[in-house]
Image (tube, rainbow, N blue to C red; front, side, top):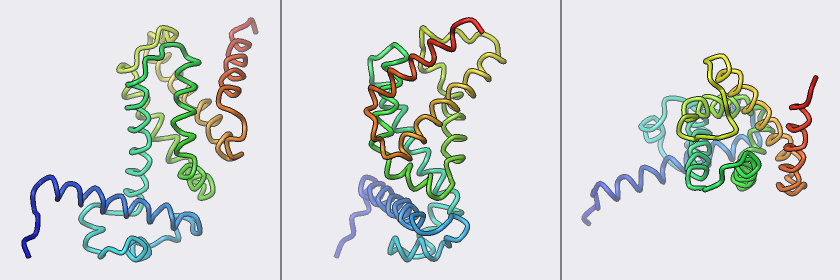
Length: 190
């Protein structure tokens, strides 16, 4: 039997194997804390060998980081493809994208791993901010940029995590309207 070792097939299989590993970690996180999960549990759940796991990842934390970065990268692609320019439209795209990922975010919440998500998202936002021009964002100095990134991502991610934790029961448009009202109120005199 001839084995298809073409680059396209190998790449597809590599992606599939990595996805099995990430799916297995998520499945295990439903019942165990990250510290309790072993590589052995991941490979058994993924139905792969231990050497296969180590071909792609050095640690289970590396799997978690890639899983989170995949979600963030998916959002970045979605945000880049949208023609929205106002903050409320961007917020709607943000909520709608992550609502589709709520099952993963719920697992991160249950496993007390939202700090991984928040940290990775903040870092990615800071790195890609120039790729997402926004007429409403007038941060000029390094300090303004740093504070703006921290404030914006911290606030938005806390809203997202709270919304997902309650099962996204409130329509995203209602969340957007209320966030915009709060931001408007914050802009008033203190």
